[in-house]
Image (cartoon, rainbow, N blue to C red; front, side, top):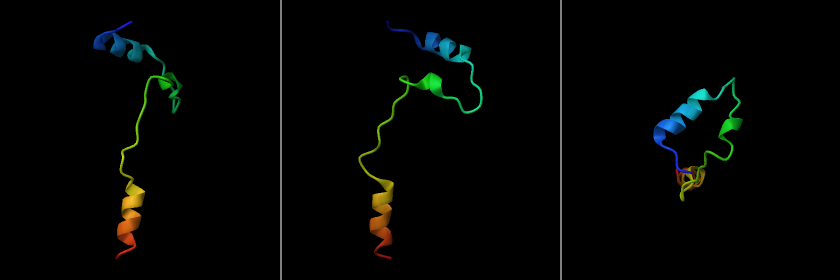
Length: 49
């Protein structure tokens, strides 16, 4: 079922949000780490200074 942007906004607006409870986002939001790693890049550079 494809919903419009406005329908998704209305659904999100109706969700009760208390404190740091982000459980409503389970299965709705995803992320992918970048191919580069900040810690790795910095540790390589800091080892040379």
